[in-house]
View 1 (tube, rainbow, N blue to C red):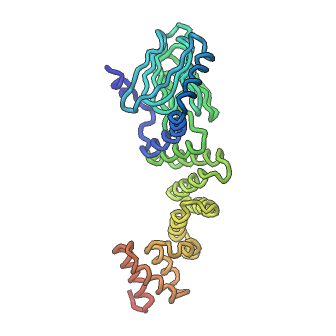
View 2 (cartoon, rainbow, N blue to C red):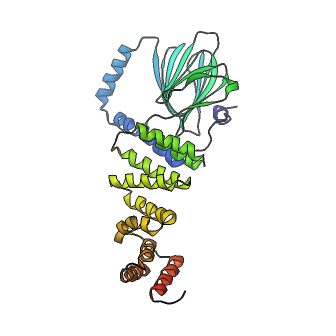
View 3 (cartoon, rainbow, N blue to C red):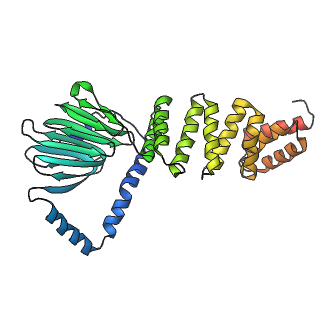
Length: 336
């Protein structure tokens, strides 16, 4: 079996995730470092290389690991260690004592037992330490998941979990600790139709870790609003909508429309009116129809004007056109 087939045969413990989150995740993690690497003048590169040779002992070496997700590579690091990888990272150390800094993708390590070899895999989410085993690590939008084929590994997660993993124990995932990564985890869980409690846990962790006023706070609020609404918790969803709108984030129009329709469905016109009024001319034809319906009794003249505006808008489909005409007939005193 070649290395690509070997890696594909591994049973990932958390299948799925979404392509757009993963693409954004990898771009954010790697984009800046790649730009700096290619922009560095050749003279500085040479100077850095000289410094590296000076600082690293003669029997120690470093290597970049970089292979597409669908094209696994195998590195025979030494007689004691083989690494099969599809993703990005780096490895530094000697033949029997090495550290893999893993950024993204799947890594499989085979360490010869009873040779005194030490290997540590490190990510932002935690570290995995081993002496003689076969194990795999995958870092994706959900976090860092470790599973063992032979032997055992010691795992220490930044989220507070510590313990050993054996083949009989299954896998364990160290959760992300950065707010943006927790947002990515929540997005991936939504795509997998995970329980709302799992998604909300990721979002709440992200909110707790984020600095007040950071852009990621608005994205966490907007997604939590939707999850709470789907979970039948409209009061909490509307509180998140209000918190987002108070910050005047770039998605205010979208959030205000969501809140207007949710408030109307759950509480009626009195609750929805503040959101509908603020949509104003930027609202869709459907928004104008909803506002007109709420104003039929209290402000019939304004309701009629709103219906006229809505019926002239190109985004009003057949269903909403009929609803607008129905509201106009009511205003005209015609029995439906």
